[in-house]
Image (cartoon, rainbow, N blue to C red):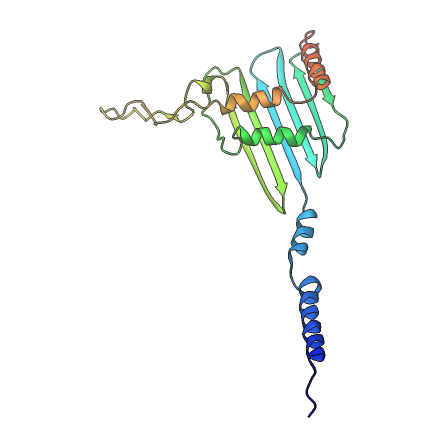
Length: 215
């Protein structure tokens, strides 16, 4: 039997190495496939703030923002008790206003915020909604509260026990918790959103919604 020469052995080993490398690159799972999967994942952001007022002149305000795979749009609408509805809508475009804004909401704790107890004689009710779709996963949250400024000095986890049965133990108790300024921060995020022109138009819309009585 003829013995293989060192050159022939080297060629066989080289072919085996190339075969393994080729399978890893084209025939088996590898990081490149994962990267392609992530690149094709949808990225969608939604956020809105609706404020409903108890008394005139403003009946309702609404901020709405969305970013779909890098294409953003946002608008503001206000309705007065005078039956007038004014809407400000920004043109759709590939801008970063909404994504930066959403990052600010995240930093200010929107995902940890919970509904706050209703307050007597509140001037307005705030409803915040956020939704995020990323890497084929999604999450959303709705938070309802009143008087965000109030919660900067009071705890939203105050509880009152039932005192109807009497007894020394049935008294007002407070859970050990601190004031929560996040409600006010979130509202300010919406109020301060957008380029200067957008905010100027929002201010004009607010003035216009207050004009004249409903006829």
